[in-house]
Image (cartoon, rainbow, N blue to C red; front, side):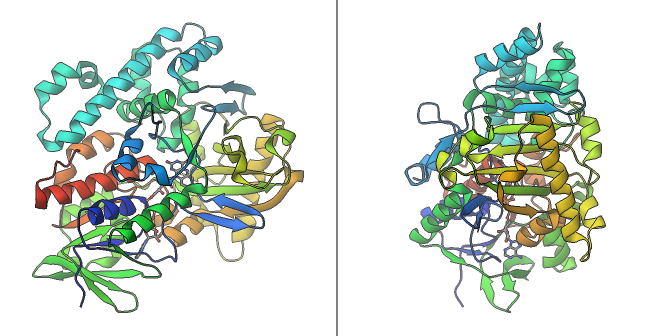
Length: 511
Ligand SMILES: Cc1cc2nc3c(=O)[nH]c(=O)nc-3n(C[C@H](O)[C@H](O)[C@H](O)COP(=O)(O)OP(=O)(O)OC[C@H]3O[C@@H](n4cnc5c(N)ncnc54)[C@H](O)[C@@H]3O)c2cc1C
């Protein structure tokens, strides 16, 4: 039987990056993916003359050649930058509030953003400047902690990141109040809360401000040929570096020998062996279905059960038979929300009456995303619990998702005054059921474990080693330390591989 150095369950973002890093360092890697293509959510599908990205609307942390972000540097270190072409997203977000018919359109660039906000909310400038300074400090502090993890030195934090130390465990609302940001400015800023899956009264300020800083300072991108392009490039590079990827291969069981992980068994009975097993699926799936209970440490179960699942995805993909300009779609990113009160919206999102969603007009970043004189729109939102799955059954499933889609499209038209329904040539709707079936993530969650209260990015970073319950069994996905998004899953995968290399070869894990 062939033995590998590491086996990856799932060819998802984090695993693709980790497998490539290890393969480039001479490791014999095997990826086992249950679908027939790589990527997990990072994929595309074709309907009629349109190719839709299944997920990615905004890639954070890439930056540019002149101002490289974390992702640019990561791709550079893996020789990927010349293989993927990106398009710039032109503006930050345009938020429409249905309860009071207000709307606010915000640009990228710290100076432009602050100037525009000051136009909307007078006397907000000073607090916004403080907000971005804090965001930058939090970002640098996180970099320091990411490098040192459990060996983080308290004295260094205190001397180099004094504000960070004061706010490290506070929520977004608490800090924005403390820096005297006017209420309206807080609300506009926080319209983006849903990307984090938590309302701002429980969302960690450190997490929000550090990401928001980079979002506004660096802007965002999309790949010119959908996120599937990135997945394909990663898969090709793995194979070119001697790695193996087997598709249509569902892992059913993780095997143990002498109380140590030793390999996996597929649903067809095939067995593959390796000393490292790296899971692109959730701990819920792994502990719940793949490991005999005698091997599961009590604390691993306790921690997994205590965590809350992040949002369950819902998306609508539209192919329109007119150009964005002809239809009057002038922005890239619309956020439609009933109220700017994130707590109220969050609670409503626990029902199928969700009214908070994001709409991206892909051609406004990448004109060639669809044939001439057409355009693509993607609506996305999530449910904060399994309300959709509870309501849906085989006889009402299609009706239920169509009802929700129709309501969201109508709401978009009512709010923006832009009529799109007559131009719809293709429509596809993905529900939590779709995502659960495709990715195997519990209840169709697309954001890993919810980061909330004291269980957020920072404690997860510091506790990472304590959460290593079974030697050489690693979790590598949106359920990992850095939470769920494209950038974070790629960065998680890289860090995991660097740690494996460091443990064997003394490579600096934080290169
Ligand atoms: C509609 C939508 C819009 C989004 N928009 C954005 C955005 O604009 N920006 C952003 O940063 N993020 C966005 N995201 C989130 C982003 O897509 C996810 O954070 C990321 O793709 C999650 O990757 P993952 O590594 O957790 O793995 P997943 O994508 O969940 O993949 C898991 C993989 O494991 C495989 N697998 C599962 N079980 C097995 C098994 N037993 N054996 C073998 N293989 C198995 C699955 O087939 C799958 O390939 C969006 C997501 C969705 C759905």
